Image (cartoon, rainbow, N blue to C red; front, top):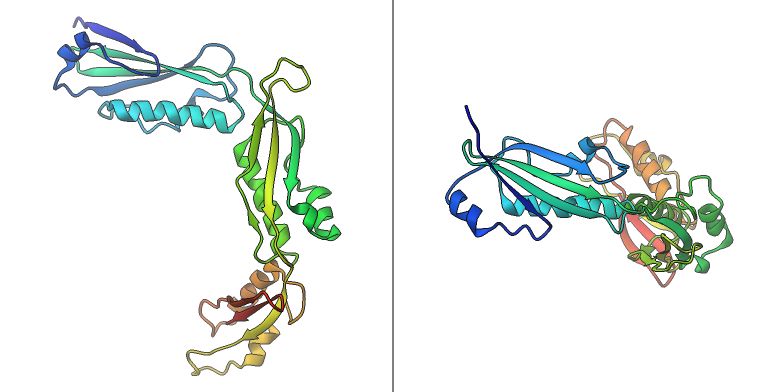
Length: 276
């Protein structure tokens, strides 16, 4: 069987010519193949990139989904430090069999690294917290390593957990600031400065814990509950101790789904009151 192919290369704007529109009008094309290629070196495997796509072989071709897949690839590369990635596109239509081959041609370009990394707001915390943040073996961001949005998010969460576990119960984080250098100076070439933004606010202590039973059929007392708590009133607030206490309470077979809830944040006395 002789096949006739109509080839159309589309670069980003993906404008289909009037000639192809005339032939393809009212036709539904099945995606026969999805081809991912690279113009030079590639850091990521084509199979990994293909997992990003909403388009799948065997699906009906949809121009909007195809364009969205281009943006998905660009975002993935951007989030991993390839700020100048180029994703070109191509379509090969088989008019006889109503099939189309989707092409994604990727030029990765240079991958950016961290230059300076700043932690804004941490200067307002105590020395114990600073040491846990900056001198910990769990620290994830270092100058010279490749930029990664996921790693930045993990570092933000790590710092927030340190704050939550050391009295800063209402700490917040802001959107990280990223400064990309546009220079030929070798020291700053292909580098970014990162500023992680935190608002620790004030330091809290544990306040009172009120225990309420919704069902008194079982012989469980308040003393039994308090015995399982790993924190006490006036101790520095520590979110991890609240979690540990919930785990202890869950081991009491007569208690179903125990939760320790924040009842009140007393900003006058700097205490967090709880209810169980």
